[in-house]
Length: 305
Image (tube, rainbow, N blue to C red; front, side, top):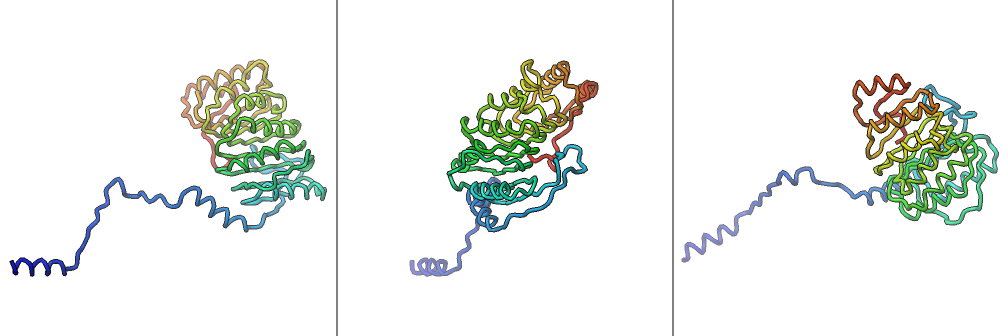
C-alpha cells in the first residue's frame, strides 16, 4: 500500500499537459467584433474627421454620369448628424455660391429634431446619403428632412439607407424627388421599400420621366412595381431612361422582356442598357438588340449601389 501511495504522490507532482483538439466545425469561427460594436468604433474614429470640399466638373468622360448645369462645390463627410447636414445646407443657401452638393458617405446620426417648415435649396444639384444600418431615430429625422426639402435643380440623388423602414416614411422621399421633376436625371436607391405602392406611383409619374439612369438595390421583391412602371398604359414609362440597374430580390427575365416590349410599343424607343444579375441566353440577347436593348451585369465600380 505504501508503494502504491508513493507512486500516486509522484504522479501528482508531474507537470500535467492538457491537449485541446479543435473540431472542423470550430475552425475559422472567430467572428471578430459585432456589427454594432464595429459601427460604434467606426463612428468614433470617423466623426472627428473634418468634411472635405472639392470642385466637381459639370460632366465626366463616362457617358452614364450626370451632366450638371455647371461645375459645383461638393462637401463630403464620412460621418455627419442631421443637424450638421442642415447647418451646412443653410450656409450654402445664405452664401449664394452657386451650385453645390452634399454627401454623407458612411454614417448618418440623429441630431436636432426641429426643422424649418421649408428649405428651398435652389443650388443643390447632388445629394448623397448613406448608412448601412440607420437607427430608428435618425431614419425619422432623415424623412423629416425630406419632407421640408425643396431642391428644384437636383440632378443626382443617391440614397442608400439600409435596414428596416416604416411605410409612412417613404412618401416624403418621393415627394422630395418629385420637386426636382425638371432636373433629376440620375437616381440610385438602396432601401427596404416599405411602401411599394409609393415606389410604383413615383416611377410611373411624370416627376420621374426625366430620369436617364435608375439604380435600385433591395432585398425586397419590387419586380412587379418596376415592371408596371415600365409598361402600364397609365404610366409615363420612364421615357428618357438609358440605364436601368436592378440589384433586387429576383428578376424574371421573360416578364422583363414583355414589359420592355410593351414600353417600346408605346413609343419609348431610346436605346437602353439593362444591368441585372441573371445570366441571359443568346436568343434573348438577340431579341433585345433588335429593340435597342443591351444586357449586362451590374458594374460595382460605377454603380453607387
